Length: 314
View 1 (cartoon, rainbow, N blue to C red):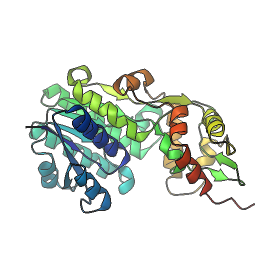
View 2 (cartoon, one colour; view 1 turned 120 degrees about the horizontal axis):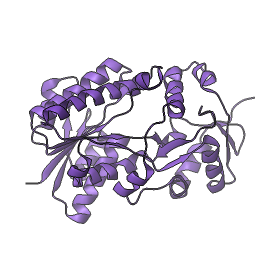
View 3 (spheres, one colour; view 1 turned 135 degrees about the vertical axis):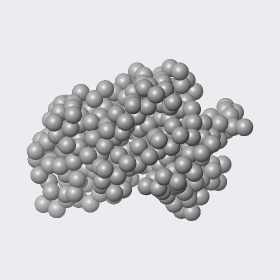
């Protein structure tokens, strides 16, 4: 029987990358895996697409113990990612993470790979709920190590390259000039294409003894915001990009929902010294694209996305 790998968040960036890596291993390398894709909406377009590719698509309510256990039962491995942005509740994210971990332990899952993050409150004394919740779940997961009933690995993603055209869309000053308001105050920031972390998760599944109880920080490149802008300008000419040099305090004062939360995240990226390892990430995913290559490979989509931004009125 194939080893069932259950992937939470299968229609999202991280989970989708894991599903893609597993399907590639099954179809191109003949690996003995089967993918169970977990989603809230299996009847949706993304769920149906996964089904057409050979995944078992399963609906799961992460707030319900029985639903979680049903989703996990029979799994050899589990990839767990939770989404704070669905509900904006630190407490709910912690509960969901613990609920899945307990189910994995109770049902004898061989290897759990958890997408975690640092506890920012503990690290630098400011709150960042979508990090802190995952940090608390990481701490809970480490208590399982003492019982030796659950093998696990923690992966920590860095800032997504994909965010440059979504979460951190620049302001458009005129036809070809763009400005990013990303508050790093001159410090370099790790980044990765969110989907390419999937190959790293697959690499961990293939070598469980090497990564048991370890935390792996994923990154493909590390540059200042200005350097990211220079590389975008180089490869997407005549479009040009620059760093607005906005400060943490100025960003937090922008007033949109989540401004303080995200401002605190960027401050952690600078002050918290997050442990991300480009060399190890490339070992797990030899095809990992550094930022320059990623921009070139996605040039058409990037240009189209940036040109869809409305020019800012003066």
